[in-house]
Length: 315
Image (tube, rainbow, N blue to C red):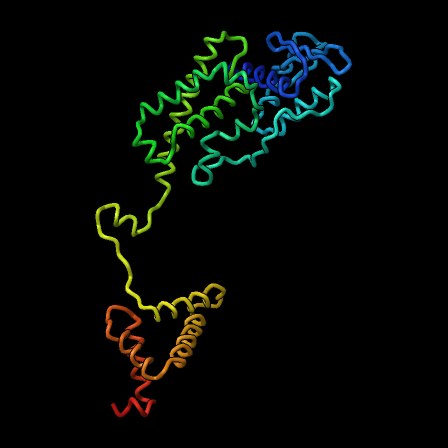
């Protein structure tokens, strides 16, 4: 597989940041790292491409392993280096591991937006980095706010501080994976500006994708197109019966026919506990509304009751 120049630069940046994170002294020349061992001796480690080394005495560091997306592999490769240097197994970054699957916006917007799989592979930069590049980060955020406008920010519930936080996270990834230490400060600032601008463009797309994945309720949809809201009619006693039904249904796992039968028994029990006149009044009230199935059931119940009730049969 062909190794690109960008991948070589990323391997150099990533390995340099790992050494810095665990505070191991080193000097670098291109892909060659001269590392000071725990006993003061110097050992040479070279980022290896296709098994080729500039000097057979150098210890190879596989470029595909140190830049691997699986952080476990990258850290294991680095720990082999620290063990050879006599420091034991040192961990340069510990933000947890991914399960190898891409996180979708619908699963976690924040993880998608911060590009968590890259961030997990990046140690925290020195505080001086944010001081040195603070003007670039601030200018990109201000430019984004100016282009998008206040209504856009309010619509998605984000503010300047939120954007600054995302920008600092993306800058952390840039410092740990993409910054080329051999470039001048001016060029590195230009690259960071381009990197953050691209990230904010992707961030905008994620915001719209998130909004499209939210399905509004029927009531919200009616209001959004200018129609009046709608509320169901109910009285206190009917509501108490409905609550009883829901309590029964919460743990009900029987087949549909058996469920209907149990609900019918429950309704008969509730009606039988009412005073006679109250029960008849309630059934008559429900029967007058011919727009639902409940009225049919109420009429049937009334007729059945009259056939078996001496008091009602004479009416």
